[in-house]
Length: 133
Image 1 (cartoon, helix red, strand yellow):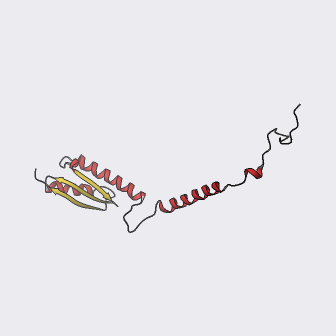
Image 2 (image 1 turned 60 degrees about the vertical axis):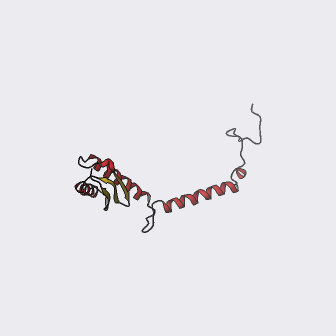
Image 3 (image 1 turned 135 degrees about the vertical axis):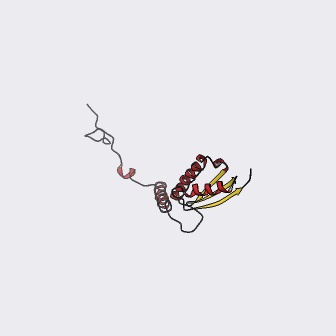
């Protein structure tokens, strides 16, 4: 026979809990929840914001720029007439800047044409240095 305990639930034989004590919110718990909500709201408001003027790029713009940079650099390396390894490619808001040394005016024009032909490129800035080899 089971002994009767006033702190046990008769139907499940589980200890009774003090719901009033367990539902109390401590100031630390309230602060943590409030801080989490504030952080999530700040992240949601700033994550994909578009800046018309300013130096910072959004995550989407940065991702697009990295893809364009990879595509331009790959196209320059694959071309047999251009020494693509000697050309540095920088992209900011879909504007490509080409830096480095180039052996001829023909190679310079071709590098600019290749970069301009990559999908997503808005403009190409030619900062290549012509060096006769």
